[in-house]
Length: 417
Figure 1 (cartoon, one colour):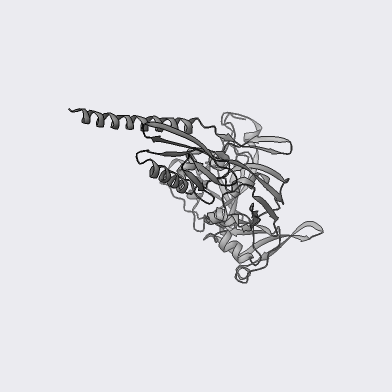
Figure 2 (cartoon, helix red, strand yellow; figure 1 turned 120 degrees about the horizontal axis):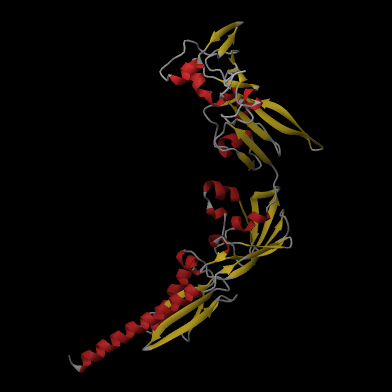
């Protein structure tokens, strides 16, 4: 091997070594960079928020997000090889959004993402030092202040960072009267934009749940109409309606429609009597009121019954478990287990007593006389022999359950009189 070859190999080795050292140094800085824990102060109390995606400034997270915006307060590290000399710079971003890249030039980074700024910086370095192997990383993301006013628990100024979303930031300040449909963000340049957080959370429209920026001011409006829907719908809940939305939108859009078993013949509406009367009154609506889009008022509660609530029932009476407690000690010989209780049991049209007895066996106790069980029907007694029904799963009863039947469970003296 001649001298020229040895020199060429040595230079190549030195270049690789410098590159490795620079990369290791940058990696160590990123890993050791402090993670900023945001402390929220409200009503004299402090609360540390540990949601990394929402309120912790995380350099590795920021660099993994393609659209992380360069923010005043960010601190970056630049390292490269100037010939055989390793060079390292710490580059902060101030409110002018102009950064000096070594002695090579100035870059205006307002409106740029990290990836865009990285590309410009590395291009500028490589243009001046072709074999520089530049490395440009974010070591400390900026933390900045954002204020919240309006219909909130209290007006407050809190810390955020560039990947804090609007919804996460305001959640702890909201009251029951806070609107999520008209949340206005006033940017540092005075521009206003109103967002609908319901559209973001329900439909995934994250354009309605923006990332916050330095000196943003958030104004929370007051809710105008908030109504509740319960019962045989797919999505029960309390929803804030927009101006022209009423019963039709509440059920079909917000509640995502009714269940197949919904009974629309009697929709129960509970409404405050008037503004000065806190008492509630009930009125009943039908499917036609949904079609005509019945007008709803603030604090209305809509309940849609399920047809199962209209199932026919029989009465189970006698020595059974307490329906309110539904527990007992099977080895106890006490008054609790020999008391008489009664409960209504729904049944299915065409169901026989073998099916019903197996369904309700949880109500029987050690003191229930299963062999002596009988039905009271039209003044007659029909013996059931529930013991055989439960012991022989192939046994079918010749008796069909009928409305107004009363099932009597006698007392069985296990330990004698």
